Length: 336
Ligand code: CP
Image (cartoon, rainbow, N blue to C red; front, side, top):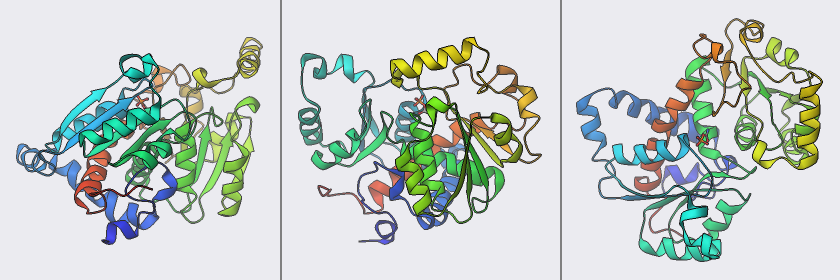
């Protein structure tokens, strides 16, 4: 067992943001991400990086749509010299369509010797299920309303790069807190850092689930819930906005939100007027995609960092792949 493993519980798979310790993030993952970002700036650096995982194989299996997670993982792998096989619409174009159960798919794919599988699925808990079956490491690229741990890694890295610290920050999580998996994973990571305060700003129908609130209480994180965006904008160092996960809403929630919209009570939109109410040195983040909740005029406003945030995703995933596959934590892989 090496140092990486000691800091990284439940290795070798990545299925939850809970697995990562602040020490692993601040002392190992983020410095390596910074080194990789620097190397990507020169031909010489990119040549060197292309030898780091030469000949290894990444397999991506996406049962839900994705732009960033799949392509940044695949490009991360290619920049590291890996080979990539991909099924980007597995619900339609794999034998799932013919009735194959998920367990059988993982039993088989993991016997084809990919070095790592990145999985996105609409059902919560699927990545953990795959990890129990797979002979090779699984990375959760998003499991329904469950978790999106590598998104949380890049989110936290973005906060650290832009504000220089995590400790003591006030972070406003805004929008769909009920079904937003990036919110859940980020909240789990933030809860590991001292004196972080959370403002949970959402319409009443989309409040954060009680299990996560209980976790925040257990970790002694100061949090308050608001249904008014203004309080979040005024007090936060980081405003983290999310879209409503329309594809996961129950019909009653959908109806209530529609009614709220028709009555003009839809406060969860942000334009320049709202951005100007934010703290002077604060930042506006969003995991993307944006689906109307942030006005386009905000895109190039200095506080809006969501394109940089998404950009960090590739380097953080390169660092993660390197640590998983060469850090000694992974092969041969044990079942969990
Ligand atoms: N943030 C994120 O997960 O984006 P994609 O759905 O495009 O992968």
